[in-house]
Amino acid sequence: MSSDTATAQEAITFADLGLSPKVLSAVTDAGYTTPTPIQAGAIPHALQGKDVLGIAQTGTGKTAAFVLPMITRLEKGRARARMPRTLILEPTRELAAQVEENFVKYGKNHKLNIALLIGGVSFDEQDKKLERGADVLIATPGRLLDHRERGKLLLNGVDILVIDEADRMLDMGFIPDIERICEMIPFTRQTLFFSATMPPEITKLTEKFLHSPVRIEVARAASTASSITQRLVKSGNKPWDKREVLRNLIKAEADSLKNAIIFCNRKIEVSELFRSLVKYDFDAGALHGDMDQRARMQMLDNFRSGKLKLLVASDVAARGLDIPDVSHVFNFDVPIHSEDYVHRIGRTGRAGRSGKSFTIATRNDTKYLDAIEKLIGQKIEWHDGDLSTVVAREESEDAPRRERGRDRDRKPREARGGRRPEDHKQTKRPEESPQPTVAANDDRAERRDSIRQENAARQAAAHARQDPRRDTRRPRPHNEDDDRAVLGFGADMPAFMLVAGKV
Image (cartoon, rainbow, N blue to C red; front, side, top):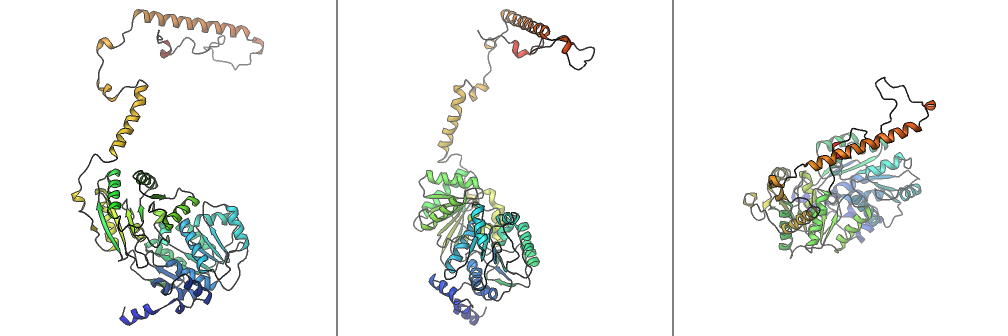
């Protein structure tokens, strides 16, 4: 880009993009005057009704890049019952709720009916919004298809389709659902397609459903913001090693750490790390996909408002969440998919602010680190020495708690008369082994005879009560005993019932 072009780019304001006066007023009230590159590139084409393919890293203002032109175009026309005028597809509930907040903020001078279709919310309440007519329908793919199959939603009135965070849709397995939904919408629609990365599967999707799109790429796919200081931190392989490393990092960054998101690969790790941080008196909360919608939104609100300093999260929080002033990101686990690294650390260093990211790595993470560095096109510096300097430790601050747990597990077994581990190594002397005695054998024989006599008496009594004239039993083979009905085990007593009881 030449210097003249760069100067012209810097001089662009929202007033130059063709937005309506009402939208411009709302943008000004929100405190914005200069559009980001993705907004400056996408908004004029979106206002003209062209298909747009936007590629930009997270935190660059992609949401406003489609919300603002959509509000301008929605000033004309009116929604009909169960037939939304526009549709926005988001991969997660949080992202969908955030887009709704943007429409409320920038559409405050408009009377737009907005319907939000996400899981964890009553179908009946969502049906009522659809019946009133929705100018804007924001949905996750699964809940949208549920309403469609229940006959509560018609998509043949959609004029604008937005597919947001498309690469995240791919990771979550939503691409077949996206294809189904696109086939339900009129061919003449306008499609706005946004993604941070462009893997081959996403490229095929754009070729199938976009018509001569205008491609807006403001940063190299999967690049990381230069405002983020990235570091790798060595650790042993054990979970308690990593927890101790994390605690030390948080304490070392205390002066500059305003708040932080801590990412784990699995939901169970989110829960375990959250409990560990609380145990050590850190101000922490947790966010993962198994939480109900109300709890998730409450946790996010507490983090945004500063009531929580640390938020332990799975990748459900990695993309698109509008938390503009996060000072630190900690990767407790190295992400398995290298693209997730870009989205995770993109939670900090937003809107021109500086940020820090620390990724805790073990010897088992080497191939994932190589993939990340290959994707972002740069080497990540080590914070305090690389993995070759790791010293394996068998004990840690958590070790006493684990020992206490083993003691608790051992006591009930001993109380029940169970053998301790060392007992298994001991062999009894011959004189300690119980030896069968003549008296025991005599008792066993007497019990056997007694049981046989009782069975014989029961059989005779049952045979005496039986009326031969009403015998409707099926014919039996000649060698079967038709006259006796054996009760219990008969004479064939199992060996365990013949063992002499304790006196």
